[in-house]
Length: 359
Length: 158
Image (cartoon, rainbow over all chains, first blue to last red; front, side, top):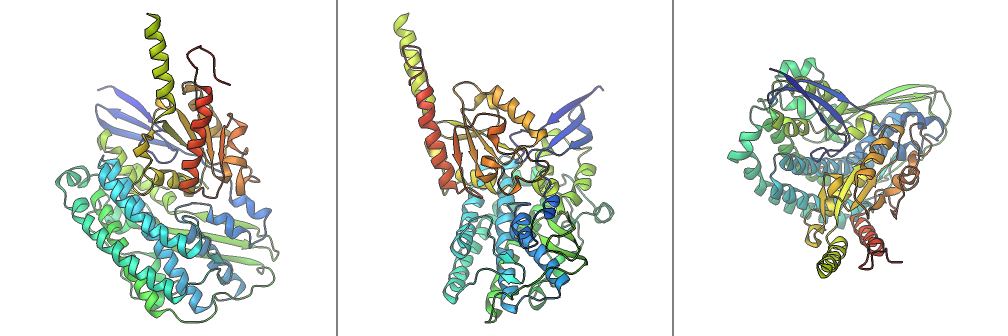
């Protein structure tokens, strides 16, 4: 049969971000996918040439607006390791609380967009309604809804008092109840299962070979999560990676759904154990000559920072590898063989963040 | 037939300033403004009750909302989208990056704000701009649009 080339993007109703996919289809079945990127490339890594290493914190926060807190945390931890300073224990716990809040808002956002990708608009609205409560916590504790800007080198810039922690915990109780109520609609619904179960299957061996990270990897039954490294205060908290065996779109959805609940649990633990004390140490001088790497688990998977210093205030090189970059090869290998109507669901199932990937 | 033409133009003028349809283009943004724009459409802010709908086709859109900086690659896409929109069209630039390039203005692949490529009518500041600010920007855009809608005599008002 004759093959047809269908271009999707960069401006397309199902794509939240500009990416161009050239799909070759025979009848309704996809045979080949060629992506083209570069629509949102800004060239952030080069900006370290002209900025002080403290100012770079604000730049890396804007690599991606959805997981900005984790990018800044990863960069700060790398610089702290390089300079041989350690953030105070309270700052480490605060970092855990804010980063898990960030994971919750990112996953709720994704669950909504995923529901929208198969046309379940009311579920999309419900998840985004719950997500607004997480953003209210962000706004009340840091002053901004999305880019919270709490990290600085040597600690955090904002503190939480006891009343605020109590309020956060009571809000989380409501959020947990509401998320649980939506669970059966998303995970047990006949129609949703028809669109997601068995679509875009990635076996555990494939997932490892293609170097996938994050929920995409854990949905294929591999228990690998950067939070197991115990960065910030995570080493002192009980943590178990969420895994699923099936490796299809439905499993990826379930992993993210369970991670929202796991994040609530971790914030509870952190709030119970948080010690009193300073929230930051004074940082003087420039990072010494040398290099450092830093890894943090983002909502989408492992983010990797390579930092090279020449002993001056301005860094020599900053290299960021983001989780979507690692997951794209897996996406390109699962798309062939699927129907054209499955493309939005499967593309969204890896939670692509194009702005992260292209920087 | 003259009465029909008059009635039709009055009806069209009225409909053009109510329930605007938006086209959103992410032009190199960090997603911060994009998710705030989407948040406007969801239950807490819920602009759909005013008949504001996010559409995917530029030919259906009244207002173009652009977030983020312009780079040589997406400038062509942006220009193309703008050219496809029917008159009277309004452009709203959202966020510091869309206004001037923001924190990325020194980066090598950034041309600057949206107004380097297409004329911008309303600027919404903020990094990221809050949903309230974006809604306010759209309301101001509607006022501008009202002034541009042709009246019964045929010419544009003021």
